[in-house]
Amino acid sequence: MTALPQERRVLTAIPGPKSRELQTRRTAVVAQGVGSVLPVFTARAGGGIIEDVDGNRLIDFGSGIAVTSVGASAEAVVRRASAQLADFTHTCFMVTPYEGYVAVAEALAELTPGDHAKKSALFNSGAEAVENAVKIARAYTKRQAVVVFDHGYHGRTNLTMALTAKNMPYKHGFGPFAPEVYRVPVAYGYRWPTGPENAGPEAAAQAIDQISKQVGAENVAAIIIEPLLGEGGFIEPAKGFLPAISEFARDNGIVFVADEIQSGFCRTGQWFACEDEGIVPDLITTAKGIAGGLPLAAVTGRAEIMDAAHSGGLGGTYGGNPVACAGALGAIETMRSSTSTRRRRRSRPS
Ligand SMILES: *Cc1c(COP(=O)(O)O)cnc(C)c1O
Image (cartoon, rainbow, N blue to C red):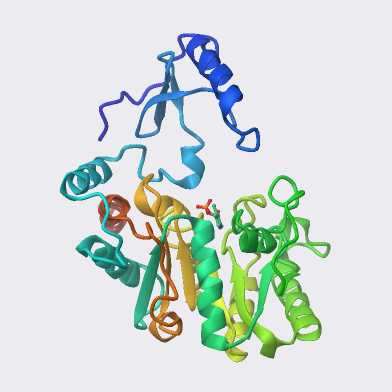
């Protein structure tokens, strides 16, 4: 699977001398706003191990923020991305298209929940995908308001800072933020005053009441939620909450967006976390685990909603870069083979 031995090996103090030296160079030239969890510099990474510049091998619990779900430098990712690098690095899909982009969109249509006709648009980062989901929902509904939830995280660009709940470290001092963003309660079972068993229906009723009274359902373009919250603490909304909110969206012509940038691509044991309660979102945003470490993001959803934006209204210079698409096809190939192995194992009589 990887040339790097899957073992923990500590040879020096952590961080070691070479990492400390690099940290000094880094501090002189890299902006302080870009933090690091641990000042250990990477030399190589493979599978679940990072080898640092001092030769230490550390178990990688960070996985690049839920990105290298198939392991660092997974064989199929490296093989496909390397071949693509040799063929061509970039043409811009909006100028001269290529197959990899189409193949990723086909895979997304097949793997995401729901049997309806689906289309996708590809981008570079999760925040960019969320911004574009808002653009698409506004174009489709001709409405402006966007509803998000307590503890939610959706990115660091201006619009996604507005959608993100937490002030420190994401928003502090960076305002003013985009308007027409409204935040309502989420069913955080562990902290819900009347207990986890009541959190689902009670939080849904509160959220819906707040949307109806403070925003007006007929003004809402999109409701955006992480089916399993990530950066706000790993919060699984109490049962019943997501179905109630998605039903409310459906009844009121609101685009229901599942932000599965962190929870998607087998992170929760299913392809997407919203499958747990049988939710079929109108739009789904993906990134992180999609491409095994290469920068790629997507908005996938109902064809008629995705087609609401006029031609030329979506895109970007690098969105769906061919090397990143090849990486995604490698990551998806890896996940497909391990999910089918698991299924085979499960169905075998013990
Ligand atoms: C990480 C994350 C984003 C932002 O993705 P970037 O690639 O960092 O822009 C958005 N939503 C969720 C749920 C995330 O976990």
